[in-house]
Length: 146
Ligand SMILES: [Cu+2]
Image (cartoon, rainbow, N blue to C red; front, side):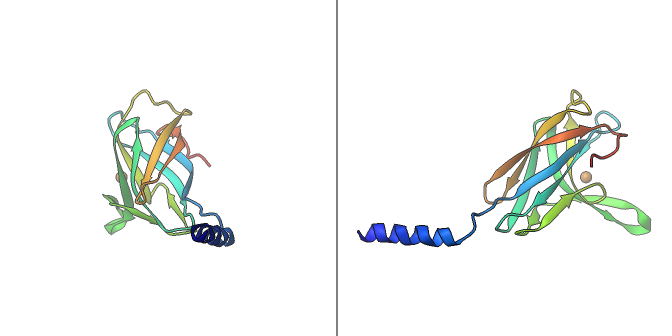
């Protein structure tokens, strides 16, 4: 009877809280390289859930390797980029990966990928959760999707 009481109390406590939300991802797209063999890039928006999260890695079956990168304005207006080990996604915050900022560098992109198609990209978080999104494939010279 005691155990039953404890479970009932826990259920009531849970009922008072909002359902926990996980990180969600939308607006994913991939920029194909202008020259075959050069890296492509993936972009998306991360929407923080009820708890702080940390993005650790992104995987794409159509690329041999994917790295988290951040571009920054360097000296004399030159932009440079460097790999980052992880990206914090605070609860409720939006973290955007976009040209000129954070991006996923995709190495050895499959040449069979065509503009207008969609391809899955998987994001892995520090709590062990993964999120798969369909990224729109965009040609090297084509405008970014809205
Ligand atoms: Cu890069």
